[in-house]
Image 1 (cartoon, helix red, strand yellow):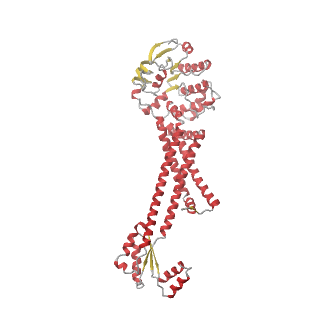
Image 2 (cartoon, rainbow over the protein chains, first blue to last red):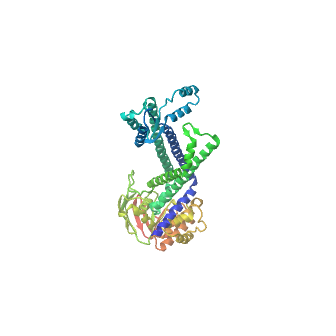
Image 3 (cartoon, rainbow over the protein chains, first blue to last red):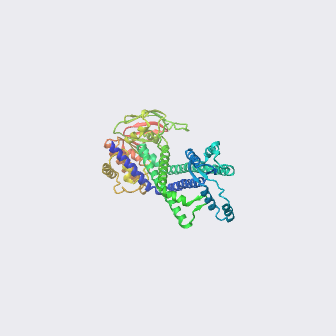
Length: 314
Length: 227
């Protein structure tokens, strides 16, 4: 019995491969469609990752500056640093002393001699500053609430920089990045669904062309799995080859863009990052494409053969 | 071996039934010829036997299997017991001659060694030696029909149903086909043959069942063609 099953399994696989070769023109037509759609899905995956990276870079530059009073003691400052570090939404905390703040200010305004001379003539007017980086920009209000507690506010020489004009800017960026991330996910899901539908349709057409074959096999007494098996094998071969080809196409596109165009970005799209992301996630992306190709191929051929395998009930 | 009891078949959208209260009993090892004009219902009768169609009413029992009690999943098992030769051959277009005949054995799980042993023997019975690698499209009508016969008999079925197997053939090849059918009938297979060919019916001198307008109008032993 076990041997019988092995023979059957081998025959199904073998027939699928032979049919693939004998129906090569049909196979090429079907695979061309699959390659195009899978390439679009792959492209949207990489684009999404690249946009997310750009968004991360923008948001990582945003921090909250807490300006301390010159009269604050070291113990008070250390305590405040420790308290801030404990807040759940705080990624990192760094301390700039008055001197460091001055040096940074000089660096930022290196071209402006007048300003620098003016500032050096007075005793250092800049306050010591704590820079707080939030984990999640959406929850930055938590940090603000903490900073506005009376005992904490008493240590500060000025309002924290997350307020007023900057608050609006930060809120806008936060909102925009949230929308962009959502669009990215919707695009990937949308393209994948469209891709699945197009591939399903293509395989259905390919099987429609060969419905007589299925009906003949039925009349000869072949079991459902014995008829359907080779079609599934064939579609899985389509899926594997199309996935590999789509990955190769994207690979070639990155090579061409880095060699010929020497462009590092295309509008918002950071090609350098996209290329390095593709390189470092090569096998993951290939695996995603293979799974997509194989699953869509197998499911499509299973559904598409069903109607020709039915027995008459009336 | 084959029993039809008052079998009627109505197709949807037609006024008169394709078959009307047909009763027929075929003994094991019999050779029965079904004659009738085009549209008389011969093909419908055979399609009922292979369970391509279901009767509107009446009972069908073939090889001990009651079709009323036959589940869908067991239909393939039934068809494996019956060898069928179709008027339009129904060869698998992507398989060569050898593979077409071998297919009938593959689906029942016969080993490759046995297939390599059996298929050439059957191909020589139908005079197709040397054509093993040809694809169906490269063959003449007569050759294709003989491939179809080889495929139908390779499993040595107890029942062989042949629907106008000589319909597309010239007289010489038609006789070759009939000789093969007689041969396997001698080996013990029950044969049900439909044909138009008067000469063949008259030469064979077998039981002849005549169908007209969906009704069984005569059933005679050792008979001549008469409509």
